[in-house]
Image 1: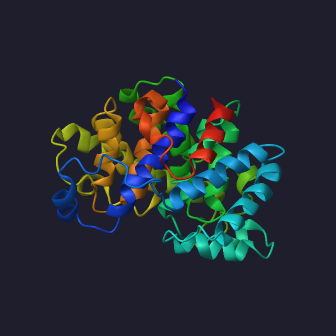
Image 2 (image 1 turned 120 degrees about the vertical axis):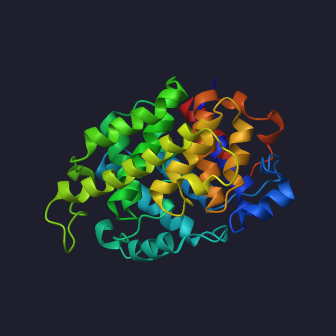
Length: 329
């Protein structure tokens, strides 16, 4: 089924479809594309945003790191982020949090001192899916690595928790989890991990005014993420899924809402992957990030067969996407 490839390409396809709608309101999107949103790639190549660029940086760092440990992965990932920041292709309205953190990372300081401590923007988790897709990792490597890659730029506990859940969500779907069971599995993870601070991976990131312990720090992030997942459950239960998905689960500019709204767009019709992409792109918030995560979930579950065959060679960075997919499938 080539689940890793399906997820990697699905993320890039969603990113590309959401790129032109990101800063448009819902009425404007519907007037142009209809209520189902955009469902055809535009251009050859079809361009993506910093979401796909940074996802590739995370994935390629995984492939080249000498070990998936804090000491093995962090220096390689730091270099990949700095290369992205300096690239002439970094012209896709990248997030200011990532740019500021990369500027601070460039002088070699400990990454915990470069992280933007109060940011939980969706940049924490729109790029994390390779930690879920790479084969052979332990649960600690996936969870710790997911939180580490978030923390390099976004130091808020909710960004860490949402990133871990995003990575585990694509892993579980690629392993065959029924999509109908995904939301409850993610909510269970929030409960079991609530007081677990991964000090080996995060070091002293938790230390800041007003926080008394590592467990207090991380619990707040899991609680916010659990609340966002509860909104997904309520939105699915209501049954009427028409209209702007952001009204149900949030605009997606912050990590837990990007996860929640992507899940909502996916779980409405997980067997219709192109409709999932269009639904994510037809949103009034951070449309490219919502659609890319929704596409990553759909592709992880269904593999490359989820996507129109003609899209594979039209998407920007097709060679890099193919190389990662071939390495992991």
